[in-house]
Every structure is written in structure tokens, then in C-alpha cells.
Image (cartoon, rainbow, N blue to C red):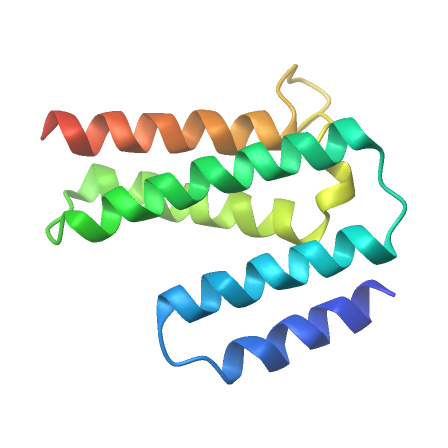
Length: 123
């Protein structure tokens, strides 16, 4: 089943022309995943909050054309973690690792906040 969603994601991404269109398509895919996958309400809420935080960080990234090496590094890490969350939204409330108390969604939200603060501070 995951292979099906992954192939749908790839097909929809290749037809997009802009990053905004990609995000809209990804959001639509996330919505369709919720409707077809058993998911508790807390996981769905956590996923949606993480998605909102990621979009805000992306908005800030677009406003600042020149990112420092530290900002680019943090953005790449955030984007990678968000893609993991996007691939498995039902696991939004699961821990990132055995050694962490942070959930996948919490991690994306914290990284988004760190990225926004770093870019806004101008360091």
C-alpha cells in the first residue's frame, strides 16, 4: 500500500511546475492519505500542526533569498524529516527514536521554529 502512495506522490510531483504547486499537491496527497488510512485523531492533529509549521518555515525561507550555510543545513534536515513524516502521517505521534522523547511531528515543529528564529535573527 505504501508503494502505491509513493508512486502517486512521484507522479504528482513530476507534473508540477513550481514549488508552491508541489506543496499543494503534497497537501492534497496528505489529505487523501487521511481518508484512506486508519489514523487516530491525535496523530492527524499532530501531523497537521507539523505541516503548518513546515509551511511557515518554507514561507520564511522564500522571503530570504540568501541563506547562510547553517540555515541551509538546518533547512535540509527539516525538509528530510518533513518528508519522512509526510510518507507516514499516521506515525506523527510516534517517537523519533528509542532514545528520544520527541515525536516525529514535534521534531518537525521544533526544527521549523529553530529555522525561523535563525533566519529572522540574521545570524
